[in-house]
Length: 150
Image 1 (cartoon, helix red, strand yellow):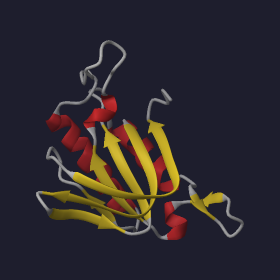
Image 2 (cartoon, helix red, strand yellow):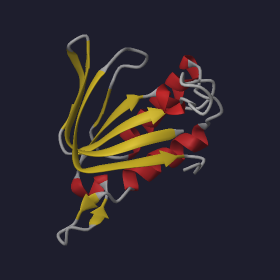
Image 3 (tube, helix red, strand yellow):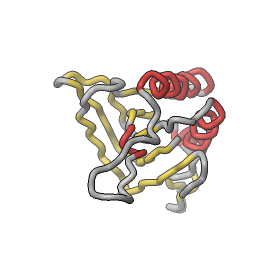
Image 4 (cartoon, one colour):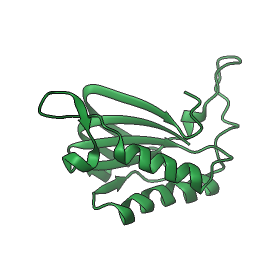
């Protein structure tokens, strides 16, 4: 499982001009799911993101987590995180999970966080064309991989 984590002042997702998710201070998560990801990968990624210390404390050090600042999450499915461009110029998506498998793990990720933590979790709409608006603060962008490949 891969994620692009962005610290934001606000973010929202639109599908056909309809807002499907909106947050203020928090994290926008672009979440990619591989064909061999499991619940273990999902739990690792959820816990890592929730506890990631990317918000500044009173000394302006990135020392606080989403829980510490009472922020929100906006989670957007992003299969293109598994695009492989090493050969040629057209990405190959053979490592990305099939849509039915990816949707199940995506929903598990969202529900795991909603059920375990008392934070607002908003989403895009799975397998649709979305317009994602991100007001990245810092900017702070972190790349995560459950297999620690980078």
